[in-house]
Amino acid sequence: MGFLFSFSSHNIHNQSILESTYIITGITVVTGIFCAITVFTYMGYMAHEQGIPISELPLSGPDLVFVSYPTALSMLPLSNVFSVLFFLNLSFLGADSLFGLIESITDFFLEEKIAIRGYKPGPLVVRAFVVILVLAGGFILTTDGGFHYLSIYDAYTTIIPMLTSCFFEAIIFVYYYKIEKIEVGILLNCKEHMPQYIKNFLKYIDIPILAVLASVSVI
Image 1 (tube, helix red, strand yellow):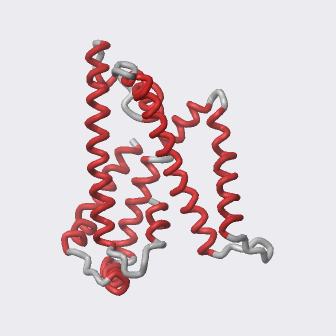
Image 2 (tube, one colour):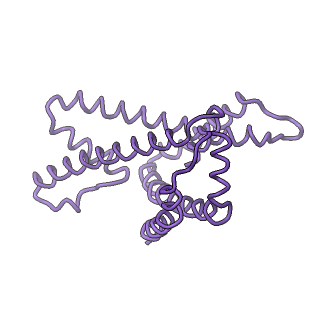
Image 3 (tube, one colour):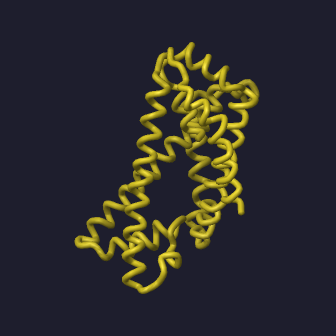
């Protein structure tokens, strides 16, 4: 979520926020459906070949990427080629995610103009510090227990915090900051009106759904 706010702060003044919303949401939904179809197709085939229920296969987390996917790729023709392409694509996805993470953190420090004993670091110094900090934190994943640390990180620092933060953000936007103020801001900056169905969705549908999803993820 943070990198979306960070990237959006660099938009031009009259950028169409509705167009960006439709594009990002559409790409996310289509990509998610395509990935789900691909994953469950391969997992169903593997379960059928091994004669076990699909629920016994790892369907999420690091096991899906580093255990199930390589096993599925080994069944394809030219498996070595597809394996190289898969992990190359995975590396690009990781680098892309790091760009968003680093920019979110650096934008916070730069916009807040944080000074240390009167010294205000420039963009290059801030980005270098964040990159070194993230690199140092990643070394723990290269140890013998790195896979278990990655599993803990994936289980407790992705889905639960994301849904919880989205839930409280929705409450703040709807009931504290007020949708009407957001609509005025969009109108002044983007010259667009917020559609009524979006306002109704935020008020009556979004928050209950997020509450249920956050509760289920915690349980």
